[in-house]
Length: 36
Image (cartoon, rainbow, N blue to C red; front, side, top):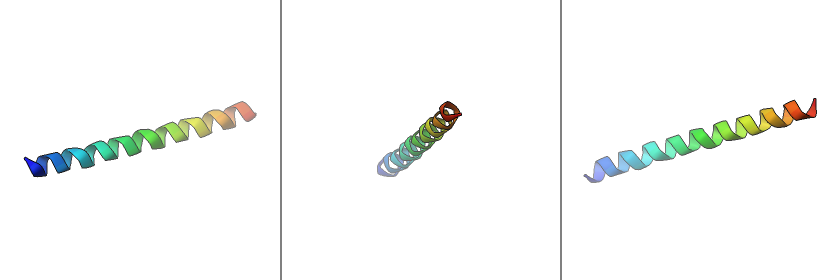
């Protein structure tokens, strides 16, 4: 049970990192698009 919880937390962290990264990427792209 403990191992499963650890795996789940790691997975959640990875998903959060991915979403934050994509949000930053979209934000940067939008900023560049607005600049032109």
